[in-house]
Image (cartoon, rainbow, N blue to C red; front, side):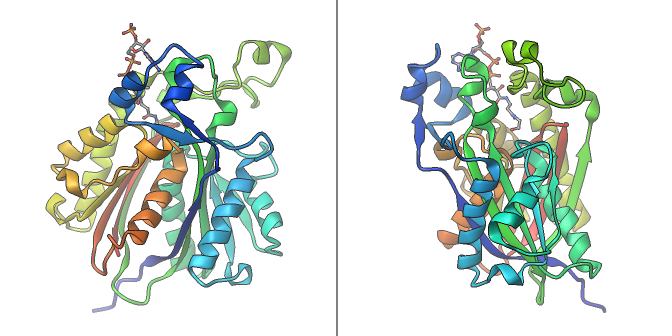
Length: 329
Ligand code: UT7
């Protein structure tokens, strides 16, 4: 029988800015408590970019570490994809800024906008591009600088987010390891529940939009929460079904780190025991597209990924978008 072709992650790395904002710091900024934030979200601290840093700066730091970790050089990369909802500018793309910063001459580069699901969308797109023969090696970066579009007066959102970038190198697998299956969906009907309303063509920037803080992130948190649990559960089940695996076959569950209660609820729905569920939201907050590549790198560093380990990645985000990927390490 012909061997199934698949793509594989051959490098990982991430970057978080040095400055840490703790829940105690937030208690001084808005009417909140460490107790509320920890019990409702699981977050204890988050990293915050400096005023000078833009999303591409975070990407470049993450990419440099990733290339170093994988003993590769910029010249070894054929395509740069950046998943982000907080681009440096609406155009040119953040990926082009990364290409510029890396001096990755003539390599194509583009962004994906799929909210917190962007990294998994990126894996799915990369699979097609590599297996079709279009490119050999892709640098996929998930980077978000949400604190630049945070309304620091809105306690329901400002306690949640952090800044970070995570990257992976992707190429065709030469063995049995790699991406086994995927499932991706979107529902634009619910887009207004998680949105940055102003600054695009629907509501261009004006003095009024700035005065009304419409360039900051708005979220109906409890609505988003319900959809996230349902959709992430569905995506995981569909992706496992496609490859004929059962929930018990999952060794490591990496859910997008938006809220510990979402992660726990999806884990319970899938009957995945807690020791298989990776959690780092306490240290980074919700870093959107960066959360899954950071988890992958940390798991590797802690030697938790062995040949044959079955990883289930699962995400939900603005759009709404949701996706799951089943992967054999
Ligand atoms: O990344 C992808 C998408 N994002 C998500 O998946 C996030 C999904 N949503 C969530 O994680 C949760 O909905 C939140 C953490 C945002 C909020 O938790 P919740 O349990 O859904 O709280 P809630 O919005 O229903 O608010 C409960 C109460 C409200 O007070 P009343 O009306 O009950 O008196 C809020 O005003 O908590 C209040 N509240 C706060 N209190 C202290 C909201 N934010 C805070 C705060 N500190 N920071």
